[in-house]
Image 1 (cartoon, rainbow over the protein chains, first blue to last red):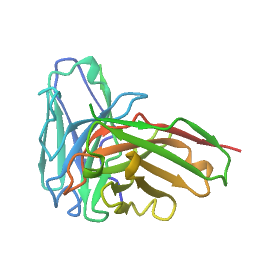
Image 2: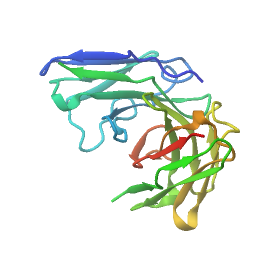
Image 3: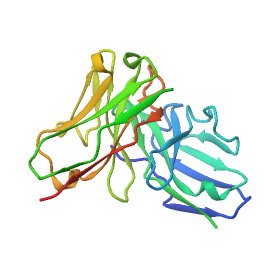
Image 4: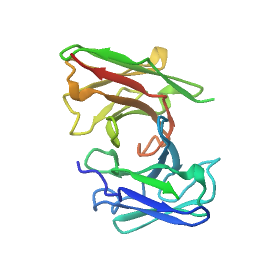
Length: 111
Length: 121
């Protein structure tokens, strides 16, 4: 199945807010409220940041928030910090496989 | 503390077989799905397939169906990913991950440290 569509890169200055989009189809993002977001620093395993569209796991900063509208999910990071610089991946349940499909990933650069 | 500990890096030749492992601890192993994710050098994450540790039920991504086998040994809380005949294009980092929701296995809350597989003649 095709990966979800994310912008290849986004950037922002410290203190600013950025939003990363994740576009799917009615078989995944648009059809189910099961979207998650992961942060991956170079050479590290991914880390869960958001699940079930907008829920934050314990320990994740409230600077990270997310939402969904139709076939597009979005991750917003407010008050950008240097340590937020990483790759971000969305994932959604898909009825094609009955588990997940990832987006292509977005590289966040903090200027 | 929940932990997923993967087996070490492997260097193999094309055509060889390989089985890598992922040992879970700190939780009830049989109550969760375990998934395998591929990350090719410099590329993104790809779901390969998942297995329910309780009954060994498996689901595969179409891109990986028939190319790999996912299995589990409940007695030692370990999941496996295996290839019967490796190709150079299998060179990648492979992560195992625990799904947090039993009913809808989408998000994962714990990840292994990754196993780097290098296939080269």
